[in-house]
Length: 231
Image (cartoon, rainbow, N blue to C red; front, side, top):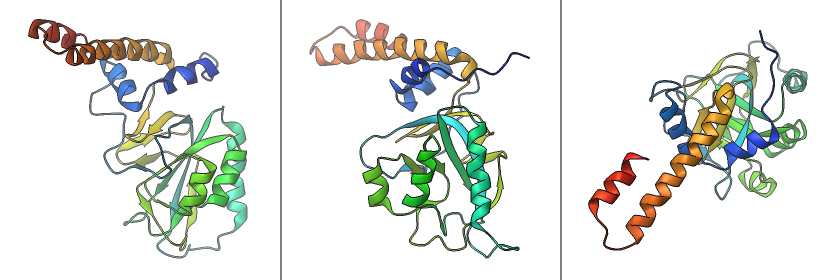
């Protein structure tokens, strides 16, 4: 088996040059998977202002917050998860699944936790649960994508880490390459990153031609149809 090679800084910039929609279009054009797979269902919201994005290798955990843990919960358990970050390549992305029957009753992340994650080389957070301290997160410019916002952390405790999780229908394995923005989150087949970036650029250029035709005033519909076939 070939040795794992993380994506390069140039490849990261190539992906981040496009939003998740264009990356999804490129994956679809390349036929890398079914058209209804590999991305989150509606419900994920970016909790900082602007159109932030985050790209990284997933460092996963599963949490509960509705009820007290069966055994005592200690800060050391979080430290075990934080220590796991060192075993993952850069960039890193925290992916936390709230597995309560009703997710989001307690916040899985605060600004203090976000400071720790960023210090560990984490580019952001994706969770189906809750976060809090939004003004501080916004001032930090730490990209956070969640389904809910909560006042309290309630009984938040970690059940498992470095395990498969699922966020709004998107299965995530530890070390999956995940890209998130205001539209949601998508997994990227890293072996095909160069092809995905190339095709995303081609599709973006085709879209630009269509937009230019629309802005040109009167134009033949045949030209529009020809442009549309290339998108």
